[in-house]
Length: 306
Image (tube, rainbow, N blue to C red; front, side, top):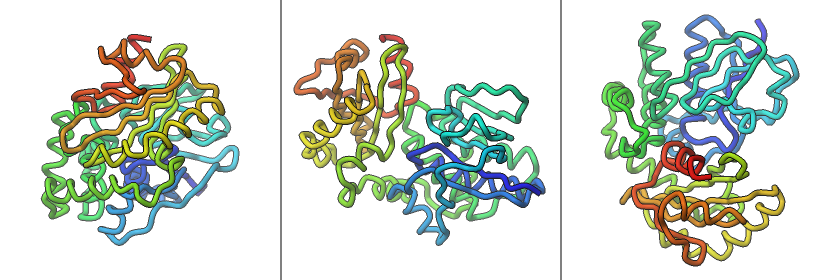
């Protein structure tokens, strides 16, 4: 049986990493035993907290796979966020909760739902196939859902996410509020990262119509700690804008306690932020009240106003 590589997006978050592990388990239960859970980037501290809690290793790091290989994509489908030779491999399946950006010349299994987290879909797949969810898999799943929905407070949260967290928490034998807050706080520690690493922890290239952009995001329990780095962050953001010929770089500092985001916006299209949110950028920054979700509160709003 040929190898099948399972991986999430570049700059992986907790959903991306756990989904690769859970999907590998799911495929094994389906009878596809030659599967390899992989990652396309470094583990962040939040995900490290989850893996350490379970005492398990991170998925194998890869940069690419051989042309013609079998792959399964989780938590992404955009070629911009995947391996460079995605057009030269055989995509067997996609499990995702993002906007569809993938085109293929062949049929494949594609499961996408407008839920808060890929793991919510994986939870459904286990239930639909009658597969038991053990404590480890439940912990991986519920950790990702808590992460992507910011403890079910994000506007991306659906009833399906809420129901999944309730059942998975019971299987995992955790209190989602207590465990979840500790996990989220673990992910906000930026002390060991340099400026470039902070800007790339969770960064995605997004085009708002003709506006070529990067939207990066970090979660924090203390916005002022991150804002103390503002001068250095702006210097590196400007360098990236020049290196990648961008029109806009948005850096969202998301307050997990108060559910707001402080944005730093640079580039020739920075004023698009003012137009989209009705705010005034002062010294390149503004408070975006209630904004915590890049997918639901940034991409559609910025695109509509571009």
